[in-house]
Image (cartoon, rainbow, N blue to C red):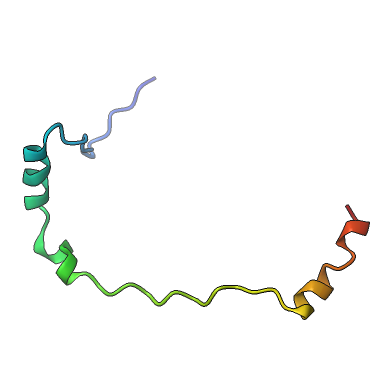
Length: 62
């Protein structure tokens, strides 16, 4: 059984001209200068002695 949807999908552009035309159609509200700033990246996770102590005997269970 095959299903036909009404939502349109877009194929990859076949030429640079087609890509430029596609990009020209992007609404100004979605263009880079109007997008919100990215969220701050959380600090890298590190392992301290307390974390290591929680798994110190893990090999005994494996």
